[in-house]
Image (tube, helix red, strand yellow):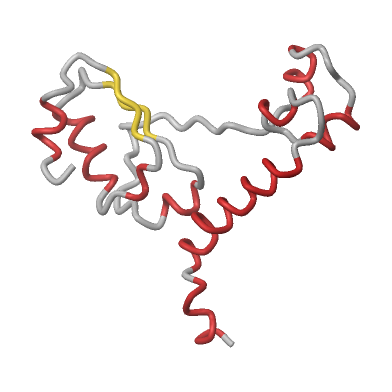
Length: 134
């Protein structure tokens, strides 16, 4: 990733998924180079938090990207899974693996919440410096 052109050259005509792209030093630079000079490379760039991603993007990439927002399961999804019981949805959560579990996945949901707290919230707000705000 230190040499975006060389990285992208090896991907000509391919699709690549870059998860947690906001962890790169200059994520928008890589995506801008790809869009402008390697249009045959299709990139799906994801991040667990759009807020966390936005702090490192120096360019909006207007005209070079399509945003897709993934939401927790909605009523149409529940209908697809043939389980529209809202009590089940509330106890199991809105992410498909949790929703499909036989029992409420308390440990898994706590792990997810802990990971979100550790990776996104603390990074975004740099909570190690919270004393300076008090």
